[in-house]
Image 1: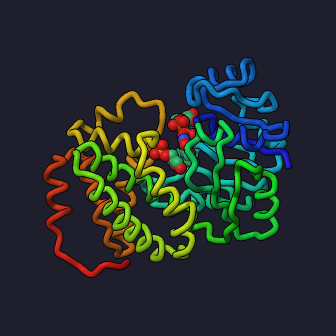
Image 2 (image 1 turned 120 degrees about the vertical axis):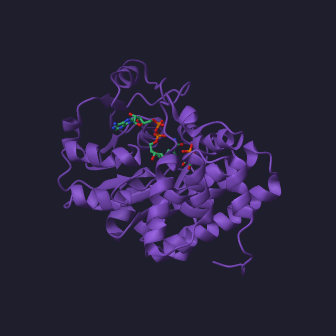
Length: 325
Ligand SMILES: NC(=O)C1=CN([C@@H]2O[C@H](COP(=O)(O)OP(=O)(O)OC[C@H]3O[C@@H](n4cnc5c(N)ncnc54)[C@H](O)[C@@H]3O)[C@@H](O)[C@H]2O)C=CC1
Ligand SMILES: O=C(CO)COP(=O)(O)O
């Protein structure tokens, strides 16, 4: 199975490295000419994944049409750009493995729904989990959820991507795998706020637990299975990104918690903090589904520029309630 990758950011590059293990050929499409050149000439991606030597069997291209020859494509563009890159690529019936974590603004569609609309003949899988790109690219042990309704394709993709350091766990719950990854980014911003505002570790643990409850409420309302949300792509990724400044979402939250303006924190960023785009659309989708998501709502208010003290005060002043989902 010859693998193509759409997206030469940190995660696309790390996944190309995974797919190239054992010296297999991989074709990576990158939007930036300098990334294409650096990968082909020097086997590195200094823009998005500095100081990590890449496999020489990864070849980069700036021409999406070249992906017409591969057997499966890992789609690793940011969620808000998946629609435009898929529309421009020769997908046909080539299987797509969706690796972006987010919900499309405007349509409120999960990335899988976008892919089905643009590429109706392409089988869909989702790869998601606790996966800092720089660790994966260095070959450190990592486990992911690989979700696909077609059992045969799921097994073939798992086998193709697996190595002792990269363990896909199979699932048929595509929606569940997507929702975990999209919602955890918003909750990671919230945990960063706790850190930046100096609210302590009890508060962070409380946010992870109550955040997981709201992820579960939303997921169940959208047809996800509870065990998927409690697995690698939900709780696993939530724990990772709510605990480390290596998370771009967590780091954005730290700035917000210190009282810095969202616009300043987002200006001139080359890398993506998906939660900032997901938070407003998640709040809309939750209201539409009749699901209460107070932590995600609070993140949306902070991103709109409301003062951090007021937003935290309002969250803590909510009526007491029963625990549970
Ligand atoms: N970095 C990580 O550790 C992980 C990232 N992800 C997810 O992977 C997805 C991609 O993130 P990264 O690779 O980290 O990106 P990145 O932050 O390293 O780089 C930004 C990416 O956005 C692309 N981009 C910017 N404007 C674009 C446009 N108009 N059209 C198409 N592409 C555009 C750039 O070419 C580049 O590939 C995101 O959904 C992210 O949540 C998932 C797991 C781990
Ligand atoms: O999704 C990720 C790890 O699983 C990366 O997290 P950030 O996008 O917050 O850096």
